[in-house]
Image (cartoon, rainbow, N blue to C red):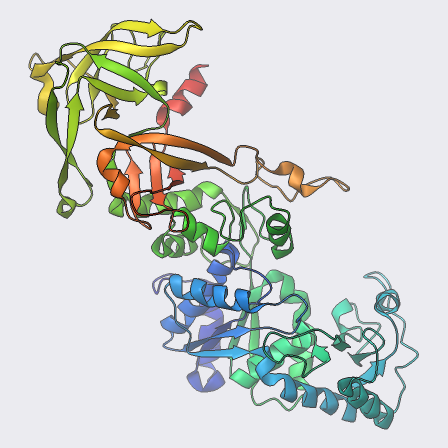
Length: 558
């Protein structure tokens, strides 16, 4: 987050510092589980944790909570590190929960030795049944009264691999009547024979997230453990473990609202389902809310950080409109994207008073926001293409684009007037015959007449066709998770989230380099796909549209 932005976590840290806590240190961490690719919700957490460390001249660690080897892979570890660095952050130390497996095991024995944990033979389903409900207390396990010696022996034999998966667990001995279900003798260790991406087959028992998380915070010297609100109910267990173990440091957990975005799902489980089902083309599909997908679509780290700054940090949960994210990238690309002209749905325009074969080279501005970007040459010829939507045979009021008898200006060029409309046998417009006024160059109209419409265009003789992928929201409804019971959430997918087409663009764009940003004037912002583009064969991905005030006006008139 930006140094200037103030939020409630600053107030919490300020109180700690005022009371001399942690010797004046501030040490945060970003602790993802490597079971999928990071998404935009994680981007907010990254910005908060690294931003707080920067603000207080502290430190921020990157830690992988790799306690569930059945779902974790090295691929995810690598992608997470790449995403954090792409966002512009560098961690002070890199840790894995697996770095502490031996210490965590010793902590398990410590709890047993002090009468605070026991080995339980109940199955997963039985443990759930015994736990009770929010409105009634749980029931104690029949194995809760085992002696310290028996529990130590069983726990050590669990580690040695003597028991089958799922037959025994280590549980904390807290309070089965607690109003907080997380304190009803939670499971701390389970038997799981799964190959770990770092420790291989060295372990067949693995700590649960709730057991490992707080102890790893303590072992790393974390002062403030920032998490999202769903972990608030876990805080009493987090604190109970810290207080009942000989950890070197007592971190403090602070909760904030998680990011919710319209037209978006941020559940790793659901995103993985989209990938595995082939609904999307991998984790980096530009429609995905993953950081890798957003990056491939053409979003910049500056825009994503600006978005996180704009939405702020709060305790109350709210849903952010998708347009806020889109405006962040528009604001950023407006300053950096090179302008060009491109026509996605072309209609032929013949300017009959320009001679066949004649070419006039005109100056066009590369970026009006950046004078240092300079200008380029574009060719005006007898035949050009304009966007089909820029012509109406019967134009409504306040329509300033081209129509029979109406005059418009071609961007950077002259004013043209439509004289004739040609159609094919099916009645579709295939060509417009126009004339141009040679006195209207350089934005001039000598007689003072006002020409409001300005159209983008390309020369038919000096353009190339390039593949274009038009991306829209992946889901067709604002809240895709809200589905009736028994209804598949994927029914809310948007069938028009990807439209593959082509565009006629200025000839120079055939050499556009992968990873470059362009504004197709009056159309949108586009990015040259770094994955599928080849030299002299760019593939253009639409990052976001431009604001279309006419479309809004037209809807009101209809």
